Length: 371
Image (tube, rainbow, N blue to C red; front, side, top):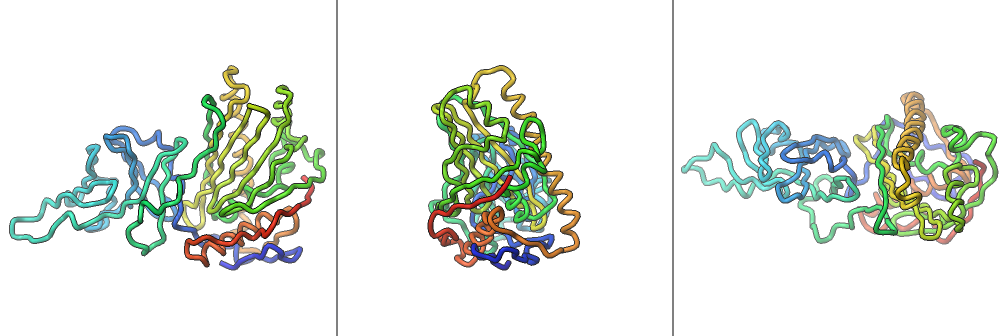
């Protein structure tokens, strides 16, 4: 993919990013599915970065993720049998320990065979459970066995008290992960895509100034007072404390937002995960102690949250209609500067072969836009 430098001209053509597919980032953790779907001996099939996976839960409670393909003849392992300890292929009965992928037994071997079945491995991926998601570490193709001790931490939603409520939302998007991510961080679409009495209207547009600073693997919208034209933020005024918001973007696909009002807080993590090189999925997990214990707060939050995510999904569906024809696109300053930073970060990650890439921000900067 071509890079977009952070100080690109006012109108920057990005036709290279407008196609139906994009370059994917490996060597990182991605949410595969909600872990509550992994119950008992049930197996679940998912597609992650174009890789077919089968996931399940062992008898000891640990979850696992394997490539949904038997190394013998390629039949999906998800058609086989799982007893809580071993996954058995439905074609020839090869038996695998699912966490390591090690083959335990090949029924067709006789006393005349010298093959050691335990030296055969199906592809297994590191898999951990956090915030109700099954997170899978996806190494670059051909990189060999993963050093588990060298893996980065599994992403986790920040929480600031022992008691809190949680909610989860998801939506499939018919666009590549690049368009999903720059749509996620786009500050100017709110009054148009999210017009609603409970959020904001087009008439509420006004000029804004935000400060940004570099952080490892990404950038941060520094702590600031939230927008006064967003109705949900106004509700926090009942506590009488100063309200602040901090928003982080971290490669490869994570947006963290933390809202604080004294001891009250709301925290969310939104990820845009590539299902294939041309499609992606948005997942939102939120936690809060704001209005904790109030009846119906969780139900109301999920109701309006689903409407909010659905508005984004519809916008992406409409955008995908135009992207089918591979148009030339442009990014403008300052509202699109975060999108340029994302492309620069992604290019740096690709060029560093998974190392520590240089941030496109050398120092804190101030951006201005109307929304």
